[in-house]
Structures are given as C-alpha cells and as structure tokens.
Length: 347
Image 1: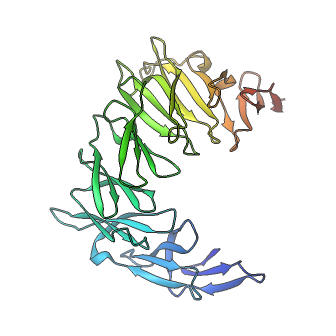
Image 2: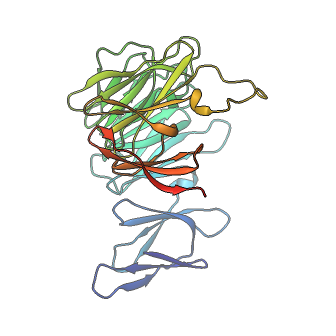
Image 3: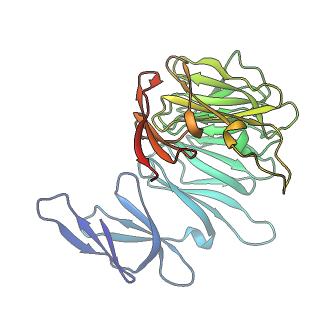
C-alpha cells in the first residue's frame, strides 16, 4: 500500500504477519502508477520540471531511480504486463526526434527504438513486442527482437475505426485494407485474412477475455456508420465469422461485448442524425432497438427498455422501465433471460 502525507510517501508491506512500513527517500507528486506485478511505482518528482521517478518497491529499502532520458521530453509511459516500462520521448525544436525508451525488459528487448516520425500512440502487445502508430499516415508498426516492422498503412478513417489490440495481448485485428485481418504478434508478426466477411469493414474490437471480436460493415452512404455486424468467435484459435445483425434501409447498427464476453450487445438506430433543434421522439425506444446475441449459440434475445448495466460475470443485468418507474433485474439463464425481478418501484 502506498501512503501519502503531503509530499512524503511511504510503503506499507503486508507480506508478513506483522505489516511493516518504509519511508520513500524523495518527495513525489501524484498521480502514481503501480506496475502490474507491484514491483515498481512510476511517479513525478516534486518541482517545476516534473521529472519522472521509479520507486523499486520490493527492495529491502525502497529505492528511488531518476529517469532523465538525456533531457528529452517524456510524453507518456506504459507498463508491460511483466513490469517493463516504455516511455515515448522526443527532443524539442523545429525538427523534433521521437523514440521509445524501454527499461526493465528482457534481454531480447531493445533499450531504445528510434522513430521516423512523431508518435501517435503505442502499447505493449507482448512482453517483447510493442505496437505503435506514427502520425500523419505514418503507419502501424510492431517492434520485436530489435526490429521494427511496418504492419500496414492506416486507411482513410481515424485509427479508432481501423485496428484494435486484444485485451489479453499478442493479437491485433485491423480493417485498414477493407478486409478483417488478424495479426499474430507473439513472435515475428504475421497476418491472416479472416474469410467470408464482405468489406469494406470498420471498427474492430475485442471481447474482454481476448477470445472473440466484432467488426462492422461500412454504411454505403455514411462512412461513420455500420450496416451489418459480424462476430468472430474464437478469433485466435478457430475463427468462425458469423453475421449477427443486418441493418435494414434507413437504419445503422453498432455492437459491443458484455463485460463477461458471453454476449454481443447490438443496437439498431436511424442512419440520419436529427438536425439541432428538431423535436426528439417522445419514446426513444421507437428509434433504438437493443438485442443481445449469445456468443456460443448465436441466439438473439431482445433487450428490454434499452439494455442495461451488466454484472461483470454476465450473470444478470439491471435496467430501468421509465414509463412504469421501475428498476428491474434480469438474471441470465443459459442463452436467455429469466422474467424480471423488481428491485425498486416509484411510489
């Protein structure tokens, strides 16, 4: 546990029967970011320059390490799942130079990755692989074993609509080419086009368990909208694409996964956004339709009252019947929903 008192910090260690506390030898400024395994803490030093510090929390006396990166500006840092740290840095001036600086990684990981442009974003794909994008159509790259490989160039949309990294790491799904393309980043990056999904495609994203994915077909009139929604179950093992929603004329669709990854939640909506000042529909359910598709069986179940908030394990969801003034609980039984239970009713 990290405890703050003004600018002073100390660590409480609960690994023994009697908790112990250790003072940190330098004042730190919030926010702080623990590494996933709890071995290190990233924070800023107190003062105007906001230099970064790493506290090595598991040493006998917590040690503070100053990160300087030769005076370059640090834009942001990310911990890997195994407590390696990567920081995006750049020099100042008319022609700034960017790089990824890497600390605490394994022997096969480079300590510095020079970049040929300004960094748009980066993230860890595996303990030894970084995925990053350069600004101004610079492309998507994977850095593995000291080598940066361009995976693909971005398409005509923003990055948000074209690629998605698995929450579990090791995989990336992109639609920049118009197809659904699955990248294995565990070693030397290589890709496979998922068959049977007609393009052009957009908005790929993964389930929280890293097993399944969703992609949408670009609307023929409005490129920010989707028509069909495709589910790719077991994407990384035995990919089985299946169309789970198809928008009729005048409609558009969108989908996301439930927290427990057992359901794909589909919304149908008008494909035209009302002008500012136009009267809103008296009942939004007449224009929005919500359904849930069971990933394992592809069973589609209507979601009443506009969907709801799901339990983290997908065992139930809570929704509101605004017309009757009730809060309802729907328990999940297999691939269907049990009759609602009233949690609260307005008096």
